[in-house]
Length: 118
Image 1: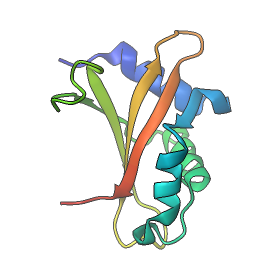
Image 2: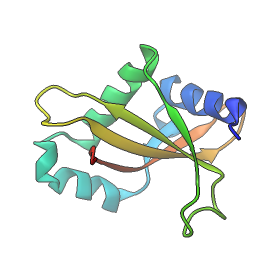
Image 3: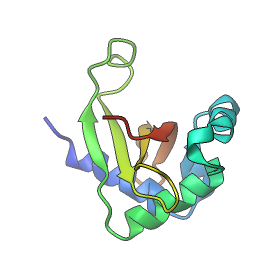
Image 4: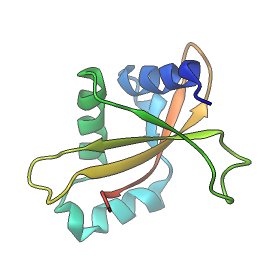
């Protein structure tokens, strides 16, 4: 079962323009992104910028029921964006979760990003 209201909060947080509404999980995650050779120098800041532009242009944010054992008690859904970025050999997969469901100032946390795997 989908939750269109929660999806709307995700989109609102990404497109709000407020940096504290759309952020990386932690410095360790950002450092892993910086060190990922497959991303060919794409930075955490660059990924956020691409995602914001993509979502503002009407790009698809997919709501996925959380079934993974380690996370299903923490989140009902995770959200993914698969985006083509110039110079990358395959699309970029980005995973996010709703961190705060405040209807006025929702917050989204980026938890993972890597090249799309089949």
